[in-house]
Length: 465
Image (cartoon, rainbow, N blue to C red):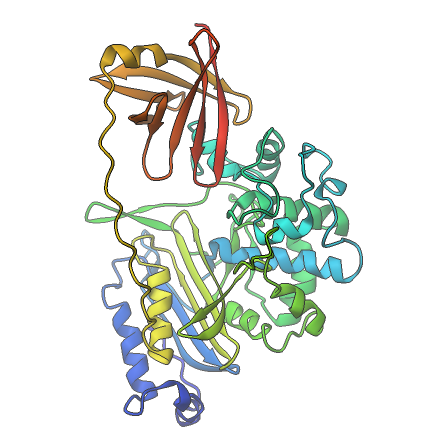
């Protein structure tokens, strides 16, 4: 493990307000170490950095960047940050807004004319706050049987999925529904307006000014990136590679180090790029049509932890995980990166924060609802749902068939969904996944709407064999 301690006594004095009377900085270091006691030279690893006012309190790496070649995680190791990347895309767009090149309340179709005309206008602000109603392109692809990781997705292919959607999840501005499609479109807007690729724009306008020299975007997964950690997932008693073999970026795909992200965290206070005016835009929370304020701002959540404001986001892409948190009242920065899906992400971030601010008070658990009686359909009743169904919205085909008394949906990629009857013409499949069959006036099944988290009412039309 690599340890960096700068003027230990000064660090301790600087942090005294955050520690319990009997807790020293060394106690805190030991407790952070304990969070990763199961990480070793035979497992993927973690990289953690905690600082206050630019002074490092904790900076360690543990475990392996590459299990095959026995390469440990070091200061130089670059790990993908998942959706932590969104705040950099947001800032790129907000810089262009500050320059008057983009309007915060402009119609998105001004920049993305390929987008369908919906009943209500989608604005740039809606994209930033995840209130546009756009269905998540990755979820749409998954419905068709090709989830992320099964194809080489590109931003152009993602845009194609987005522009094929005849409907939205909700009226723009009515709800907050997290969707990667928002940040894919923001990436296109930034590139089309600036005339630069997002990688070039952010390098010149964000990374270089902040000294983030080890940060870049994965725009081509085949490109050699020095010191890149391999992503891993748990497999039996060991691990297997879990890499994002795709070329989508903007919503994710930032390759970086904890030291670079710590520099970025300082910009939430000092705002060396864009000044206070840009900082205000970056931290402005979304407002719904009904007047409610949501937690999401410019690519980050504006939350509280034990009553203390915190700017934060987590990330997950393939085998990579990330946590980025900044507490403006105390100038405390927490950065966590890992190349191991089996390690808890949000829990780890909260566990580190708890060492400085105490355990967060748990919300009162809601009472469990009584489970409704199961709705049963006999095999002969299920037979009328059998057939082929196609969707132009997700460019996919599903086959409904009955097997062993259950209705199955099978995709061309041989991905099976076992459906559970819920009511007449209604089925469920896992948490939040529903399938509602439609009939014509003669009572013949004509198709179904499938709804999953981040993508509601995706239509599949029944076709003749």
